[in-house]
Amino acid sequence: MTQLDFAQTSHRRLNPLTGEWVLVSPHRMKRPWQGKREAVPATNLPAHDPECYLCAGNLRAGGQRNPDYSHTFVFDNDFAALSPAARGAMADGLLIAEGESGLCRVLCFSPRHDLTIAQMALADIERVVDAWVEETVNLGSRPDIGAVQIFENRGEIMGCSNPHPHGQIWATRHLPNEMEKETHRQAQYLLDYGRPLLVDYLAQELALGERIVAQNAHFVTLAPFWAVWPFETMILPRRRIGGFDDLTADEKSALAAALSDLTRRYDRLFDVSFPYSMGFHQKPTDGAVHAEWQMHAHFYPPLLRSATVKKFMVGFEMLGSPQRDLTPEQAAARLREV
Ligand code: H2U
Ligand code: ZN
Image 1 (cartoon, rainbow, N blue to C red):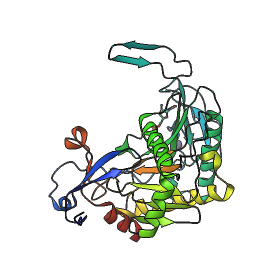
Image 2 (image 1 turned 180 degrees about the horizontal axis):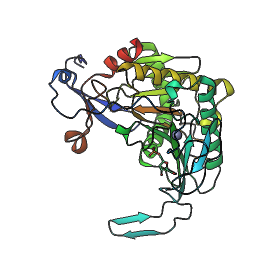
Image 3 (image 1 turned 30 degrees about the vertical axis):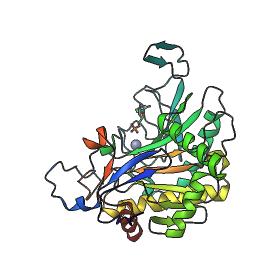
Image 4 (image 1 turned 60 degrees about the horizontal axis):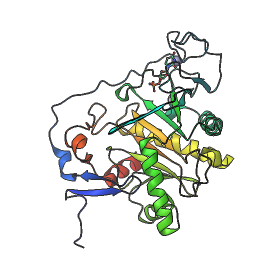
């Protein structure tokens, strides 16, 4: 094989978790930008906002009143995208559909309207991790739920409806597309090599070091080799952990610490409360063992070169393959240094 110069040559990289390729064009970062600039989010929020539907004691849009909670608070989404009762199916030639049952929950991370994970105390982030464990166990133990997807949309630019620190949990009967791809690819790898894919991947990255952002006793944060978004990262456990329900007390604390570390790095990168969509992939909750599954977090931040210039996924990205300019190695180095 001819040597490939990552920093100079356009190339494509394989995402082994999905089987999809990403186009990397490292020489393009220098191009001029006269396009859209985003607004920088407001930073002077009150600790309690009487108008906020997630603050303690307030009325929600659905008409219910939030309790006077002092740490985390979880409720059924008043405008849920899934209903537990959805049934039925249709198959008419190429027109195929089926009822998709499920539940949507909203998790307030803190009663403080003005905080983000980056600003929360470690002990309070640990309570968020505890809530994720509890939701995984409760939703996952239902016979009609096959997958528990935990996520957070952070910042207006990512479509977040409210600055109050919160995330969502959507639990579905079937595996959503990304979970389906990752389950299939991890299962095939375990069959072929006898070891979980992400355990091998982490070992390779730790040996190289260039894409590692941070690490603690139980978790490693890195810019994946196949990252699509400019500052995309993953948080990976060091040992094989299928899902939230497999975490030990030490690991829960270490996960909270990893989240705190990464979100603070992001905020320092462009000196702005950093927007992203993040979420955890974990083993399906269909009752099977899923020895192939290694739980992990994906962070997908939209910002490219400053607090106001966003990466657009349009044109070739929509019709062909995703494409990136900055290399994951350059992104990891910048996140390591801040
Ligand atoms: P996002 O900001 O990530 O969109 O999440 C907010 C969710 O909260 C959203 O799904 C729900 C919305 O349906 N919500 C309620 O359940 N009750 C409310 O009073 C307002 C918003
Ligand atoms: Zn609030």
